[in-house]
Each structure stands twice: as structure tokens, then as C-alpha cells.
Length: 83
Image 1 (cartoon, rainbow, N blue to C red):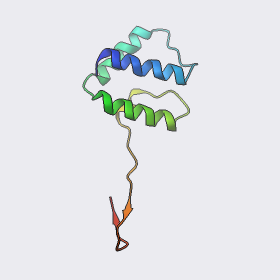
Image 2 (image 1 turned 60 degrees about the vertical axis):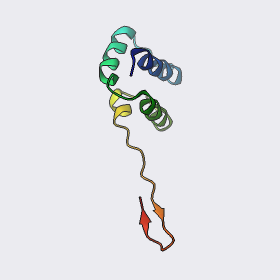
Image 3 (image 1 turned 60 degrees about the horizontal axis):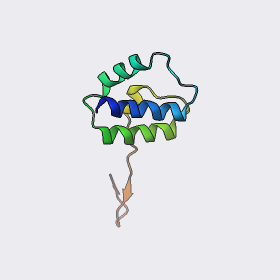
């Protein structure tokens, strides 16, 4: 991810959680960028959106990076389960 993409994520978190307003925004951006720089932006934005739908508090980087998508089980025509 680029630094501007990480900043976009932080801005979105602030908009969803107006009370979340760190005083050292540059320091927060730098710290988050170090954690997200090797991640794929598209996946991280998907993860962020999922986390924001589930949590009632501002996420930390680990919530977003290690988000586990639910596994969808399907029943085949014989009644067996498939992933």
C-alpha cells in the first residue's frame, strides 16, 4: 500500500468513529504505513469495510490485516457439504 492509501483508510476510520481523532496524526500515519506497506490495497480496503461493519470501536492494524473471512459451506445435490 502507498502512504496515501493508508491515510485514506485512517480518514475513513475517523469519519465512522468521530471520537477517534489521534493528536499525532503524522506519527499514526507513519506507524500504520510501516505495517501496511507490504499489503495489497484492494484486499485491505475490503477487510477494513468488513471490520467496520462488525466492530463498534475503531480498529487497530491487526484487526484489518488478519481479518478472517467467514467460510461459506454449500450443500451439494447429494446432501454433502462443500467449502
